[in-house]
Image (cartoon, one colour):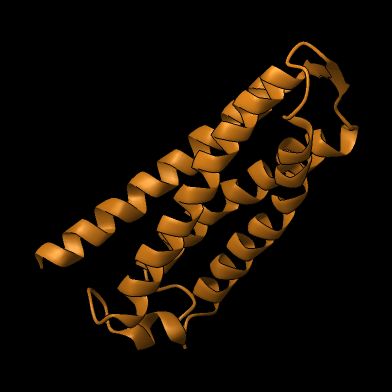
Length: 147
């Protein structure tokens, strides 16, 4: 039971960290930024990536590791699969901004870099998809989606 509580805690803290990092990225982005500013966003993006890996690890362990509900509770629930698909889509979408931040953080710190509009839209789409996941989790908790 202690391991399950620890895994659930890690799962929730990772969720909060992901949301905080993504909202921070969105609020800090400007049409033009110095390489130093992009470097700071790249660090936030790194925290976002680490939290995503921890969330996935904790979630998969809860699902397949025999902690909490039996694995078939999740495996047979189409809403759970939709949640996983949304998480995967968010992860795939995040590649573009991450690569941009990593490529553009190096160089003269004061050099101004134009931020493509697509970066803004990708982060907004990630946030939108992220907003859907909690309602799906609530539905799952009530048994919706089970055969």
